[in-house]
Amino acid sequence: MHGPAPAWRPMAVSDLTAVMTIQESVHSLLPEREVVFAERLALFPEGAWMLTDAEERLGYAIAYPYAADFVPKIDAVIGALPEPATNLYIHDVALLPVARGRGAGRVIVERLFDVARSAAMTSATLVSVYDSAPFWSAMGFVEISPSPAISATIAGYGGARFMRRQV
Image 1: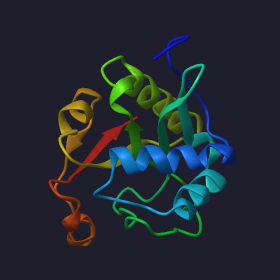
Image 2: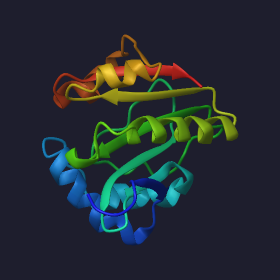
Image 3: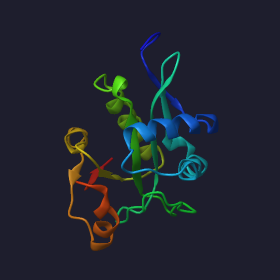
C-alpha cells in the first residue's frame, strides 16, 4: 500500500464495482449479486462503509437493522427494514489481505456499534464464516444456538456460526 493509512468512509453507489471485486476475492465461496449490496446501501446507508487509502479500495462493511432471531438468505434482497429496528445485522466486513492485521476490522465494528446505539438498537448479530469466529469473539460476540430456521439458512455457508452481542 502507498500513501496514507487506510481509513473508513461512507460507501457511495460508485463504490459498488469495487465492492464486487473485493467480494469475489474475499468471499468467492459465498457470492452475492451487486443488486444485494445496492439494496442494503439504499435501505441503510449509515451501515455501508468503504476502506480506502489514497489509491485504492481495500475493504467494505455492510450492516443494517434486521430481526435478532432471523438471518437473511445469502444473495437475497430483503425489500424493507424492520420497524422498530432493535438489532443491527452485520452482513459483511470484508478486507483484502493487504489491509488485514492493521486494526481496520476493529475500527469499523466499533463504528457499527456506534451506529446501532445512535439508532437505539440494543443488539448486533452476524454469521461468522470461514475462520473469523475468534475475531468476532474478541469484539464481544458470543456464539448462540441458532433456531431451526437460521440453521437451515446458514447450512451451506461452511463452518458458519450465529453470533450475538449487546451494544
